Image (cartoon, rainbow, N blue to C red):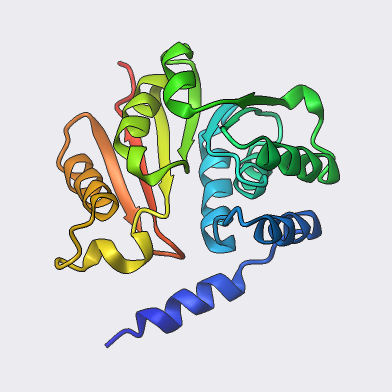
Length: 211
């Protein structure tokens, strides 16, 4: 029998973060803005690299850790990052500056995702990362699928909700939302979905490419 806990620990420990990401992670933890794990971050970088992404939207800036991983795989991409917490955005600005990411590749938007996303142009982005208020995850993913180009990718970290999603007894609203999101997208003909159990989990949704 496979020891999944040991495998997950090995995957996390095997991931090497650059110094600027280590510093950003420390600052995020000090701020209370829980960052994505290094193992999930590495997956984000691989996906943006494979997609040759040039335009990325991040719903939930935190302190910049996930954004740095996204840009690590797509060094020429423009990142639009949205957060309702000015303090988080300030920390992210410092993290991007520390990593020497040119300001011309960054667009910071302060506001609630539910207010900002409806005003954004549809079919205009290669990647959308949804890492905001879990209670709104289904709404944000719907917006993400609208925003990405044909063949684009929507990514949802933390989707296993600390193991709660796999526990049929857990019926709190956030757990139910994540569980429903996984089940509905896995059975949808409109997307190709994959669920990674590495770290805190990562749901990957690719839209159908245009003919």
